[in-house]
Length: 237
Image (cartoon, rainbow, N blue to C red; front, side, top):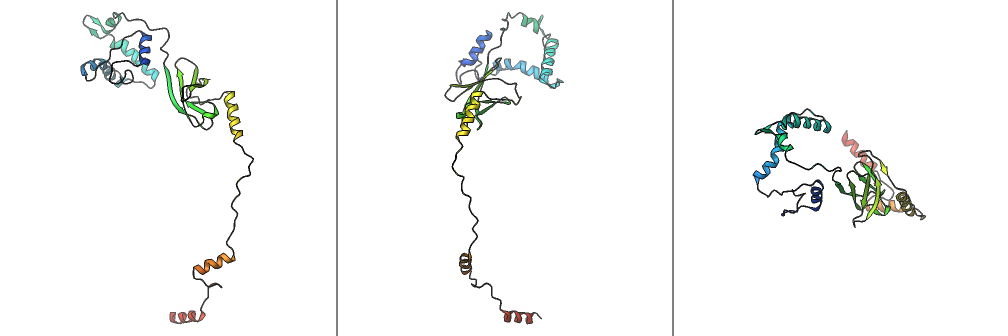
């Protein structure tokens, strides 16, 4: 219930209150640490998981929905409750019909803007002004609508695009955003000469003599003592 009410209170969040009003239902907040009251709510879920889901032969969401519908109509709804059935009791509740249109829920997520001034959402990319590259924006998409809107951190709308099919991998860039990105790229060009590469400068004769002096080498190179070499050869025999 943390996503429905304000924590520590029994007041509904404005978003959920609007949803309840749209469908014409009342909401009773279950108090904390009331296992029996919560058990009544969770009993239906436990019944479905044990009686249907554990043995359901399904491979997709559509097959699961069709299998659940058959289970409810052929097994769950015909359970006796006194002299009536579960379906009969539900039919006598006098509930209101569903509205013609679903509740206009809105998906709102934060997304980073790439260096190419693009925002990723549900497997597609959408353009924003080039000045927002590297920032965070909010993407909002209302269910049932074909328009996607992008808002800045300050809450101002900065872009609106027609939504592409989810996971299509499409790139949607408006002409004004493309022109702004091109202008930003061209303005970053410069006519200044490139950096001078470091030249190859091997050590000269003076540097080699100085290095040899530091290592204790003779200025003329390595001196071989032939007399000492001959003595070592005699000993080796």
